[in-house]
Image (tube, rainbow, N blue to C red; front, side, top):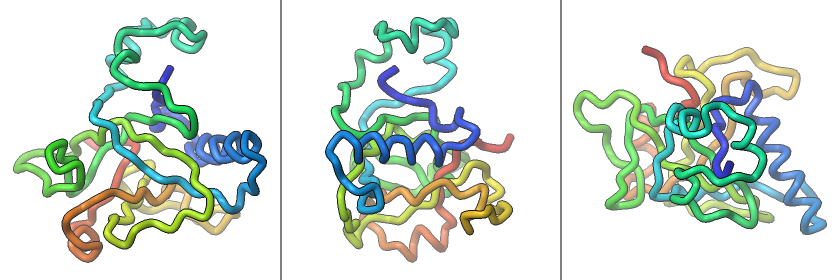
Length: 179
């Protein structure tokens, strides 16, 4: 597939580390100098629709094109991911950035996200450092790496409001939502 359902991985951090490793090997770069840059694409993808179009068949991974893949351009570097939800905010296609959640909208989807490795990347201070969690609990056990088992990665997203605004609202990305 052109886009991967990040929420479907038991350990999404491993998938993302593998993406960085592939990039490091491809360009002969030290992996410890690589971090992700993030570009949301103007395409939304539901895993349920993806599954229905492939009928769960192996053809989805054998290089055959499915109808929804025509909406996405292939990427040379990095990976396209889908299946992320927003908490305490939404994505505005008009402003191409974070916006306040609409009344009654609990966890709107984030569009397909292009995560591409960049060497010695320093994010613009105007970008919101949005935490991505596996679950809405936002808490986890500290693993042997010293990180929470629930935290995946910080995703830098454009916004016309400052960090403090989104932090006060508790804005985050989630791999799965609670009913």
